[in-house]
Amino acid sequence: MEQRLTLTSASDGWLIEGELDGHNASSLRAWCNHIEVVNEPRTLELTALELLDAEGVTAAIETVRLLLQRTPLLIIHHAPHLLSHTLYRLGMLEAGQRLVLVEPRQEEPYG
Image (cartoon, rainbow, N blue to C red; front, side, top):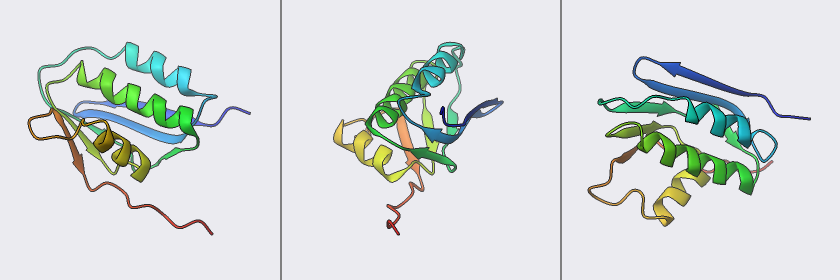
């Protein structure tokens, strides 16, 4: 069963909601390929995005890279902990980069 994923464009950026995994990563890639280049900073809101597996994390990283090709500055709000950590490990958050994280989510305990 394919997980529900909602992809929305707004005047100041993009919103991705739902559960991202290997089953729906291709729809996220296709959506990104239709986004046009802009000359102003844009936001990416991820408050309601859950990464369910390694393919979902990979797709999220690919999405960030694609969006960085379309805007001079990408500001990500409420990124899932695993995405934030992976962006850091890849060196994408170093000083002088065009990527900013605002209020990344903390790891939630399993229960």
